[in-house]
Length: 561
Ligand code: GLC
Ligand code: CA
Image (cartoon, rainbow, N blue to C red; front, side, top):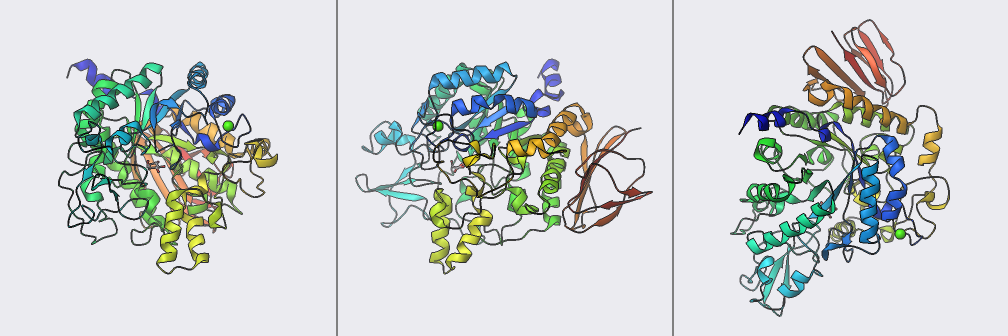
């Protein structure tokens, strides 16, 4: 490697200093009254996002799709789904975003397609159809499924096709067959398609479940000794995954100077480092999920679970320290379209809603990595808490509900589990103002809006010291603070189950974060030479070396020499 390349690698990139906003287009802003958010809706809110300080937007899939998984089941990679608008609208969105110095990251699903994709329609015609090998078909073993792998949307991961007397693999919904990345023709078709979007002028990709694309060829049975032995050991971070991603880097990401973020569930740090160390030329950054699994019970998601702050702290700290040491880069998030709202889950979305929202913001923006805000997080949106299974549209949640009932859970408890764990909690319409359906649509929203809630963009922004403003300040100050961007991380008091404190350091400069995750006052020691940068109560209650942390109080302090 020549010197210039090394210099480029060590220099901080713009996307490492910027904040990303995630849009779930279906629920963001409807412009034509059909109850579904769309591209023109997004365009109408670009000024709002610019005002917040956003420099990158990640939009979840908008390609043609039957919508069984709200767009993650792609039927045509080359077209915008008419429910969201036209290709012209999309080009206009790009132009309007770029005018405001906002980059657009498209979501790209490369692990599977919809069963309505033309490749799959060809593939099931016959075993010698050229597209048959684009997917993962296997003959039955003793008249049964080829192995015991479980779909992430429940049930077997195999579906039988009688006309072929074969099964196909679907790690997700039965309508989402997995692609065969070993086939070089498939890879060529994928690169061609990625290049098509690059040529349109987009700025990067968020790569859906990208660490699952390379399966162990033998496809052996899993042992089911632990809750995670469901097949994933044989396809997560599989044998050729780094090779394939590097190939995409060389052909598309690198030449186009793309910002890329991989969705890397069930991935250890040692692997995440490989995906994101710039020297390896794979991805810019990694979404990982251990911190949003701390309230699983014995590794099981669909349970009523509590979490311990010490567990949350130790997961986050481990990732902070080891990614930093090994030149990896974290994508920092509390929320996305697959998670219940963090404010409802880990904090208090009722009496201390503002404090809790701001606490989450401080803890997130204090860490090393690129922060992501999921739509509505900047106004403290909370869980939808649907009370009836009929209100749910999401296949994953509906399947989980039926599994719970089948296994003897009563309906009331099953709904409580969904209220706590379902991703539908975060998919309800964005709350813009206090009109009907919160200004999201003039029609009937595709997913019911939350019952009367005083939190909307308009209402929040009218109140003094509001959450939105708080995010604005954090976004600005983080960008200019080298310690926050580049500094090392140290957890303080590992065993404290009420307060999360950590220090970031660069040279002599130190930033200290303290956050009280409880409703009780907590007294802690602190060095008196720290000055308050930002706190969710506006001031600090300290005396000499003691600080009194009020309910859900969070502080960002700085010590400079
Ligand atoms: C990712 C997406 C999720 C989707 C799944 C299958 O996890 O974020 O929404 O259901 O992949 O594509
Ligand atoms: Ca619409």
